Length: 114
Ligand code: SF4
View 1 (cartoon, helix red, strand yellow):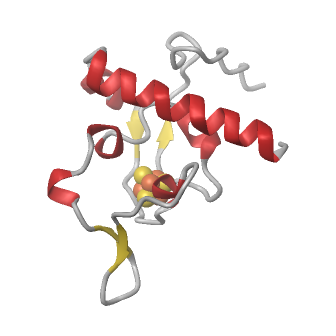
View 2: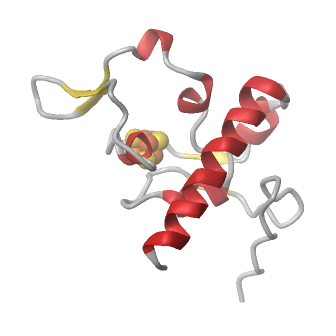
View 3: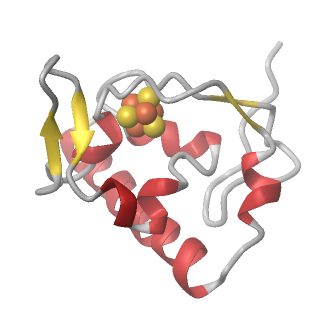
């Protein structure tokens, strides 16, 4: 994937997540019900497009959010869709059930696995 393609993908994803979580007030519980796993604190989602100024590290050198208790809803709910994972430079520890029936808005359905 070219740098420009990745930047475009990340920009669209950021805008979509912002709209989904703050404007459209989607039923995020239903979306998150398809998400599996736990956050491994890799910090990759905090570096989409730019490094978040609130991203810090703790005493063990693990990434931490300096405004965790007040973090933005699009951060708290990341990833909402499997499509969100394509924007990351590192591998997120979350996975998703197939979303072919419910793809992220503005994204093409994922091809069926053979
Ligand atoms: S990319 Fe995934 S595993 Fe890494 S910090 Fe974000 S939510 Fe957690």
